[in-house]
Image (cartoon, rainbow, N blue to C red; front, side, top):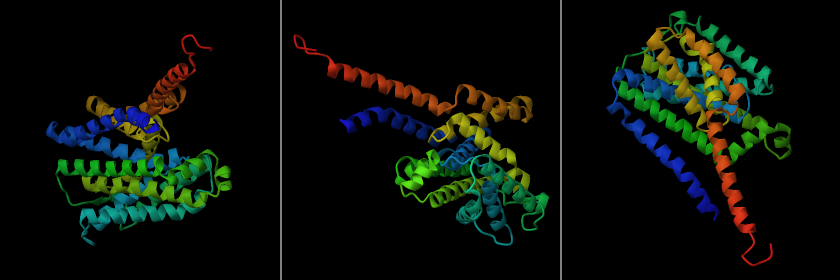
Length: 335
């Protein structure tokens, strides 16, 4: 009975996922290069929001310096593809992931002992420090930035970004929705002292979640660098990058699987529409602020939480109907 119920209630979600996957695969055949570039950007932000959701949503640590790992991935790709090293693009991606994970492990040791605003300030300070450091280092090109070999194929970058997003969400689904590791992460988020009392090594689990979220952010940083062919510290380490990740996750649904995808794609499209019609994205900052206020006041669980509440209501109604049938007296019998 349990398997039958699960199958009956899950197949619409699987069907919707299959439809979205097919639509994304065939999209390049139906749009021009401009809209394909916008779609590529929407995918990137959906993936970045998912990477932040690992530490911010599942682990419960609000990271205001996540752009540091995006920038590390971007600079590793840019430096290794330069004339001094001459690596291919695909070879630089694992290097960027490892570099970001190692840095996260190093700074995560002391900072993950902090909670709340203290952890947020510590990570923000690290990202700012890294940006200032990259402004003066010769290997990063300083404020002048670095150029990468141009590769003008929008289809290539779209499918690479799509593969990266699929990988990111598959990892999140498996680790945080279907494995013991995910239960450990959620346990320390809800009550760290209780998780430790149950025998969970919370320090190690937090560090693993932080390193994973950093590596996934670096993945998109590396793709972004090759895609735009030029980066500087402001473009890949700026605080506005993390700000957008945070708002996207809050809008979509903190600690949910598909919420970051909804919030990331929606806010990026709003950004591009504003740019198309007004030619300036300054107004987008005001929209981010308004989105935070509206989400906190009217949609605290995000868009995904709204659908989840409706699903719970349907399940509660079905359960009530079943209980009514079970407890209803037989005709002519005693109640």
